[in-house]
Image 1 (cartoon, one colour):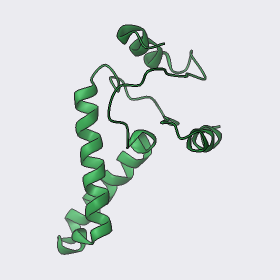
Image 2 (spheres, rainbow, N blue to C red):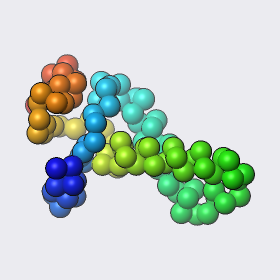
Image 3 (cartoon, rainbow, N blue to C red):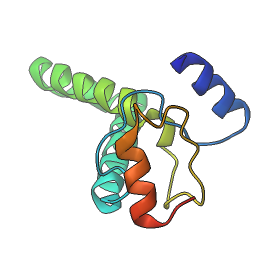
Image 4 (cartoon, rainbow, N blue to C red):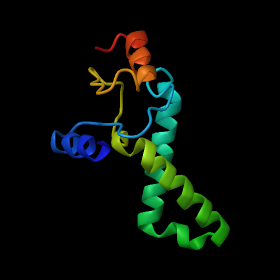
Length: 107
């Protein structure tokens, strides 16, 4: 199910969340933005090979952190502002997402 969501969103060139919704993802947008900046920064460091200069322990920690960020923020990594509309597939399961959208007035 999560695979279908990600493929359809990528095809439509939209942002998506196909894992568990993180509470405060929209209502606490400033914190989410910091996580996205950190995620992009780690990806750039990994591509440029800067992680190889660090100690093995630090590289392992950063790679684990990068995997976690990819899992939860990978679908919104290029999102720069709050969305105009949110489509929720399972409103009972993703009740927190629904409440955040109602709080922010996002249809």
